[in-house]
Length: 182
Image (cartoon, rainbow, N blue to C red; front, side, top):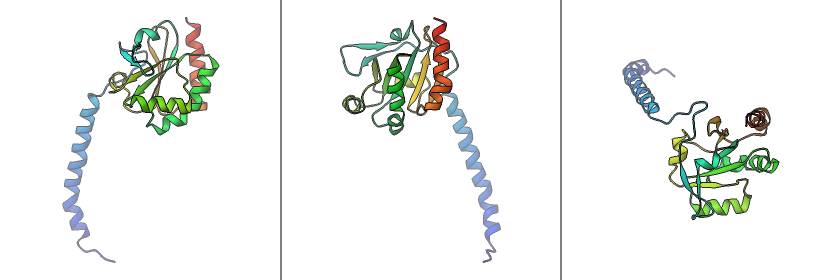
C-alpha cells in the first residue's frame, strides 16, 4: 500500500517529537541531580526509628557500630522481597553476620503479619513508615541491601533481590574481609 502523505507527516511531526524527547531528557537529567546519591564508604546517616515489633523500643545508627552488619530494606507489599527472603533466612541462620531490617513505607500490621507467615531473619527491624531513612541512603526502590562495616561505613549497596550467586561470590567474601579488620 502506498502512503503518499507519509513523508510529509513525518517531516511535520519529527521536529516536534525531537523537541519533546530533548525536553524530557533535560528535565529528567536535572531531576537526577536532586536525588540522594550513594558512594562507596559513605557513612550511614544518623537515624532513629521505632522498632517494628515494639513501639516502645528504638533502632538507630548506633546499633550498627562495632560490628559488620547487613541491612535489608523490605516491605510486605514487595514481591521481590519475598523472592530473596529464603536467602536472608539462610544468611541469618549461618551466624556469619547480623541481619537487620528496615521496613519501608509499609503498614505495621501488614509487615508483622508477613513476618509471622514467612519467619523473620532480622535481629532488629526499624519501621521507616515514610521512607525518609532509606531515601536518605539513596534507596528509592526495594528490596535493597547494604553491608555496613564496624565504623558505620557502607561497603556494599545492592538494589534488587539477593541471589545465591551474589551471596556466594560477593557478599560472603566481603563480610569475611571486613570482619578480619575488626
